[in-house]
Image (cartoon, rainbow, N blue to C red; front, side, top):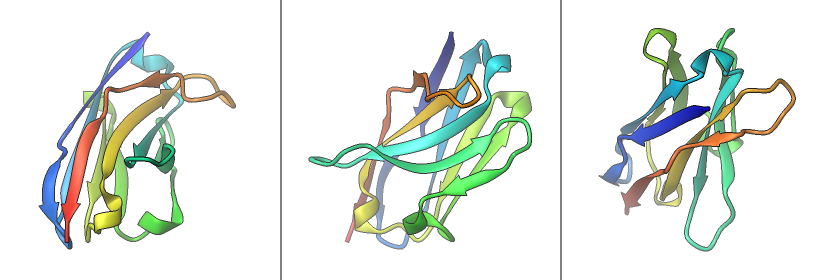
Length: 119
C-alpha cells in the first residue's frame, strides 16, 4: 500500500503561482512513476504531469507546458507541482497518483487539493 497526501492548494489571482506537494508513505520503494491529475467542476479528470521515480523523466499536457514543473525529492518521498502563470482555466481539484506496476494504471490516489484561480 502507498498513501498519498496532497497539500499546497489555495486561491490565487491569474498570473500567480502555487506549489503543490504530494507526500508518499508506505511501500514507496515500489513506486514506478507519480502523476498529477485535475478535475474541474462538471468535467472529467485529466492528466496534468508525470515523473518517473527513478530516472526523473517528465511529461506534461500541452496546456501546462512551460508553466508547470513536476519534480521529486526521493529522500523525502515527495512529489511537487510548481504552477506558474496560472489561468482561471487551471481551477480544479488536483490529485496526485502513484503507479507501482510498469505498464499498469495509477493505482494509488490522494484525496485532492483545491486550486482556484481568480480572473
